[in-house]
Image 1: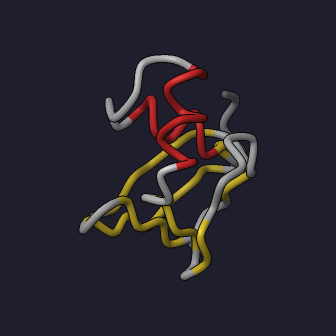
Image 2: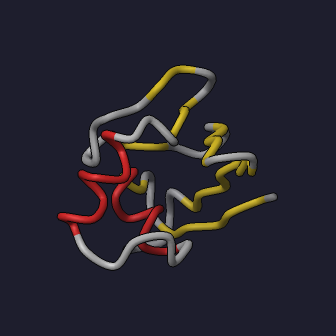
Length: 74
């Protein structure tokens, strides 16, 4: 599934909120500790990790391909 965002990057925490998987930063931290998120095949535990266009994020069984617009403002 393709996920679009404006700006040069989106953080893992922002992505999880955008997908309505979590609603707060505290929930992001707990979710990431469970090991459910992989970025480009590697387990990710940092909610502030910057994701860029082309990154592949696997959350559970779903894989998302990120498409950003570096010329747009957040």
